[in-house]
Each structure stands twice: as C-alpha cells, then as structure tokens.
Image: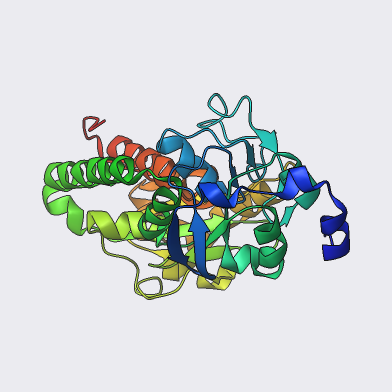
Length: 304
C-alpha cells in the first residue's frame, strides 16, 4: 500500500484536480465530497462499479481487475479494451491510479475505507457502503457521482419491466422455493436474502428455503447441512480459480446421498449458473444476465 509520504512525492500535476471545475456536493458512505458536474476521467475500484459505469455509457479510464478474470469479465471486456488495470479490488495500486489523473474515484467502504484519505488526495472520491443486495442503491450513487441520473433511471426501469414480465410469465410458478449454494475450495456457502443473487430471487417473488430466508449475505455450510438447501429448484455456482478446488467441492457434494435425497435433485431441477453473474460481478448488467438465466430455466421467452 502506498503511504502518504510517497503519495505527496508524486508530481503535483498528477495529483491535482482543478478546484474551479468542482460544482456540487455529494453525500456518500464516507461523508460529503465536492464533485464536477460531469466527471470525465473515472476510476472504478470494484467489479460492481466498473460494470455499472459501462451500463451507464461510461468507459472508466482505470478499473480494478475483474475478479478471477484476465483482465475483465466477458460481458464487459469489449467496452473496457482501453481501460487501465489499477490493481485488484482488495489491493488497488495508488500510484497507477494517480498517474491516470482521474477526476472521480468510485470505491467501497467495506473494501477501501483504510485508503480513503489517500484516494481523496488524488481526486474526489465517492464510496458506497458495501457490495451485497443493495446494488440498485449503489448504481444510483455511481450515476449521481458521474452525472448520469437520466441513464440510471432508464436502466432501473428496464430491469423492473423485465422482472414484471417474468413474474407474469411464471404465473403460479413464481411461488416456488429456490435455493442457492456457492462452491469455493474448502468453504461452501448458502446465500441468503441480502446477497446479490438473493436479491434477484426476491425481486421475482420466489420463496427461499427456510434456512436461507433471512437477512444477511451468506452462511458457511457443511455437507451435513445439504438438506437445508432444498426447495423446488436449486441453483449452484462455483468460484473456480483454476486449481479445480471449487469444481471438486461441487462434484463431491453432488455425489453425496444427502444431495440425491433433495426434492430438487429428484425432480431434476438443479442448475449450474455462472459465478460471475450470480455472485461476483454484482452490478446491473449481471442482474440482467441473471434474469436471462431465469428465463432459460423456466422456458420463458426473452424479455430483452
């Protein structure tokens, strides 16, 4: 991590953002920041912020590498061809960020609180509180900070339109109970209502297994608790880093007699979905890709 002495040693031309261009105040998770009306050179430090900027029609000059990607998720790679990688989401490279001379930095309090002051010395910096099921609130913050309020209203209205159309097409199936489990080497999780994936299911109106129908992001779950995942359908996703660990976890669990006894397994209603879409990316583009998955799983015509 860069220290303040090193940061202050960087050329003033790199660090300075012009006070005359700053025109408005925005209150966010870390306080109040004075911003330009329409920032041009934006750096995004989370997967969520990066894809939300793309959805709003903005190409960030810099962004944290997409999790477990080289360097970007497939669904945003084309738009980010000219975007500079500024480190990892949990380890931003402050020197690289400063060299880009941004006029806005978007980050996350849970991820980046310790370097907020250093980021703010580079450019006006706006944080959301966390990355979980409040992705709709977060994209509004990013849009407000970047001067794209009209675009975010349209994007959220289109998502709401799709959700309404899917609920309509589901009919009584919208009352089904849908479970979620994520496989990670050595630590598997059941995802609750406040997760990104849980929020998508909640928007559609699906029920959740009793053990997952509660606040919070996720809960570590052992194989003995497989019965808690059961419902009419079960979605699973694996955070595979290339060593086969998550894939092996999934295979081991699905070979278990407890898994075979699940109502969803007996009915052949278990579905592998993308970890990027359902857990890692976290923005409005991923939310729409998750709706695509629901349409395919339930045989619904595309609402795109």
